[in-house]
Image 1 (cartoon, helix red, strand yellow):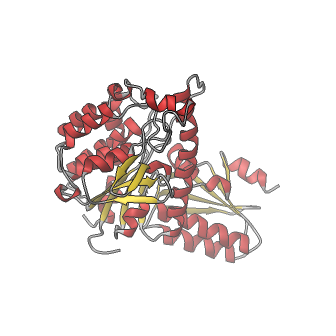
Image 2 (cartoon, helix red, strand yellow; image 1 turned 60 degrees about the horizontal axis):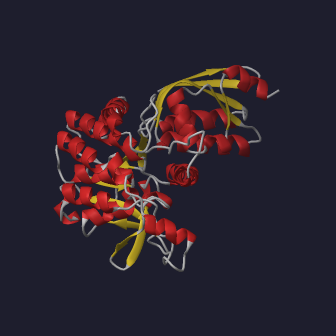
Image 3 (cartoon, one colour; image 1 turned 90 degrees about the vertical axis):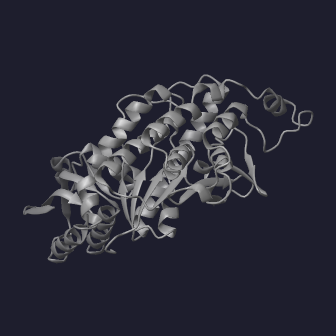
Length: 280
Length: 110
């Protein structure tokens, strides 16, 4: 391994749980361990973006609470729902999503404005998926708002988002924990923080049903990708899986401080090894 | 990382500490030497393993292959919850026989 290996932080999908990445950031910052690149997917793209832009930890917490709260699901997309029943009359298409993205876009603009990937202090890649081909589409240029909006386009819930000539959806649909992006970019040490989607025991609405099916598929894809990249690559992948004794659902933003705490704790356990590996 | 071997009908190899990029080659060498020394059946006791990175997972895979190529098997016992989570996430429960205790792993060899 090189004298100063390149270190990447990959934050996988996982909605509010991804806030644990801020705890990881805090622990690394305390030790003076710098990150050379950031990769985010779905919920993880929000945290990876705030960190890459050089916001302070307090700003990151404040901004993510602004971005990710229950208000973003309050407005239903009635036209889309009608299009599911009357596809011709209401022109069903790739813009189907049960929830309107108006509040989400407003929140994203409030935090990121017109910032682009060129404004980042640490190189950033955000994972998305091409709606039509299913291909993984890692974004590392253009507006950050567009990349995050595409990366969090959870199937059935939020509509696909057009970026350039591609129609993009949730990165978790193709690569929920994109450690391969970090490997491809030359990272030798990869801190991989990922989360399994919670699967409720009762499913009593169409939206919950959609979340549930999506969660099953994402969890299996996540495990397959993780297994493959661990087995075949030379890079040192350090899994950082925080323990959550409390149940954290999609919009439990009041649990952000707890998620940060658990992320910090899980990282602190790996600090001695990380220091040794980085020759610090 | 420390490795202790207890001889028996099936040898038990107890590992403690961290299995990572700095230690995994030592583990692979010890396990493979042991397998090729006429002990293709091994139980690796993970009860005191505190951390495992991708290098650790690759070390297990390498030794599982060696044991099976030599006509035996590599079985893993008593992983702690944090390690168990990594093993599950990496799909190891599908390809390696993993038991909650060393006794159960021993019994599995009949």
